[in-house]
Amino acid sequence: MYIDKNEVLRYLRYRGHDTDSATDEMIKECADICRNAAKSLFIYSYFDICQAENGIIVKDTNIMLTGKSIARHLKGCCRCAVMAATIGITVDNFIRQAEQEDIAKAVILDICASVCIEDLCDEVSSKISDEQSKFGYVTTSRFSPGYGDLPLDLQNIILSTLNANKRIGLTLTSSNIMIPRKSVTAI
Image 1 (tube, helix red, strand yellow):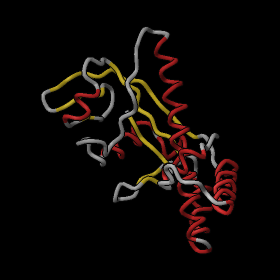
Image 2: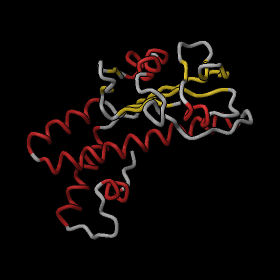
Image 3: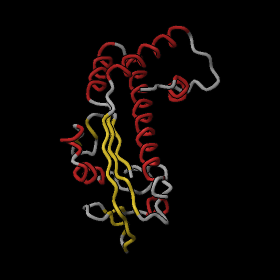
Image 4: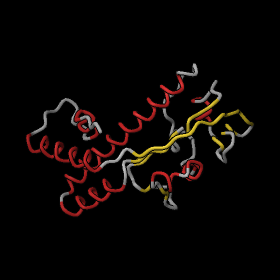
């Protein structure tokens, strides 16, 4: 997996500032840990969609997409991909261990993991786009629960629809936190 150092620096708010050798070395170490520990786990399925009075119905599922933000995002669309992705629990374990030993390292490791999951999601989105272009479809960008007014609790239905627990080990706490933490669901 690719971890762009410039993205790590952007998260660290190092815009236009030089990093010292110790910071450079810590970023390199954390990126290496993340690359070696991360797994590319993802699933997605395609569904037809239709507009309804109270939202967008994702056909053949229990998913109802509500809110003005997702309605604008999917305006003119007739189908969607529902996806879930994670880089796995091992990265979470390294972050937790670092939190006990070196908080700066834990922060940088967490950021590297965030960059890593975003890279994975970009790869999945690209794969979806490539597959759908063969049928003449143009894809939108990802849109996740919690964006705009799309409810965060939609994640539970997405994970259930995709059977994400069994297929990629992705679960949800009662407060809608995904486990492993570096995970994403999206439309």
